[in-house]
Length: 174
View 1: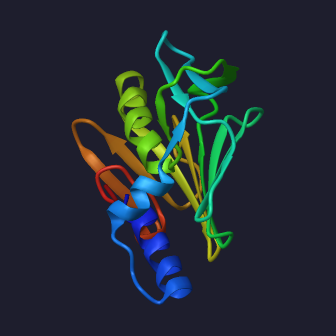
View 2 (view 1 turned 135 degrees about the vertical axis):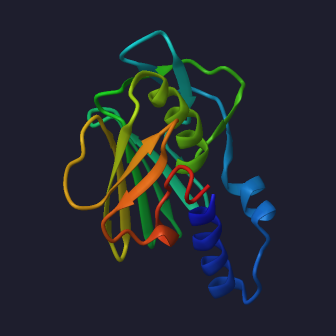
């Protein structure tokens, strides 16, 4: 939640001259109606997690890449955060349910991280960053020079030079 709060606080301060509280942003940005949307299905068991279909708001755009099994949030048209789930989940459209779904990386990551850890412990969250983007991708083995090793028993170890203020790391950012 720190990343979302930081990005939206910065954008709102720039655009309106006043800082909004995190609750103002969460109420506006994070929830959407569950019309036709997507369901992520675990490749190891029958666990499912519903996520919104592509949505566009004033402060954030949420989208799903079904081929790459990746969700993406673009904040204020200026900063992009992605979460890759290929190798752990499949994704497909599903009819409307009327439920409230959350369209932020961190809200979905909290549920998905706990489930992934029920099958793979430790799991590696690969992190790639540029000034305008942070890509997160779950993997069973570390790749590259920047990642977080996440374990139920051992906690989180961050490897490499990761700007935590622009990343969503379980046990570190939230």
